[in-house]
Length: 127
Image (cartoon, rainbow, N blue to C red; front, top):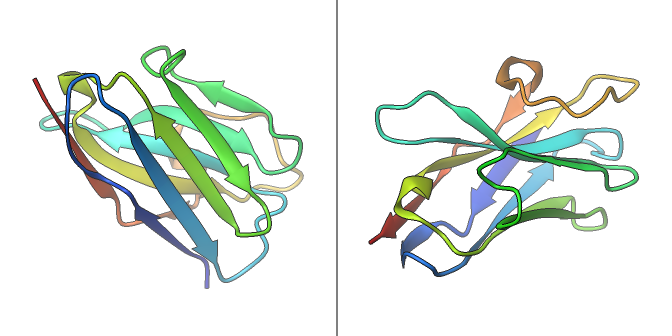
């Protein structure tokens, strides 16, 4: 059974940084695309960033480009989201997700294509 567990959220002030982690268990993630999505208050879930497990190819939402960095540690089965220069509009529950389609397709920003999801971690940015 695949399980994803996020950690690292919290309350920060605008301009500060936070690093989120997502550790997977239950199977090998070597072929999975791993993504981060978020859902702010009263908003729909939106794509933030994703990374191919092999090769390290990445994709970012426009809102994350230049401020957020996604990375992974294959040995630890962990994907990270480093978020810098945070803004109040970044306040959301952040979810880790895994796209298990094989062979691995191009990185998608569509939530319904990600089969596995974590429980989410809250990030609150105060102004």
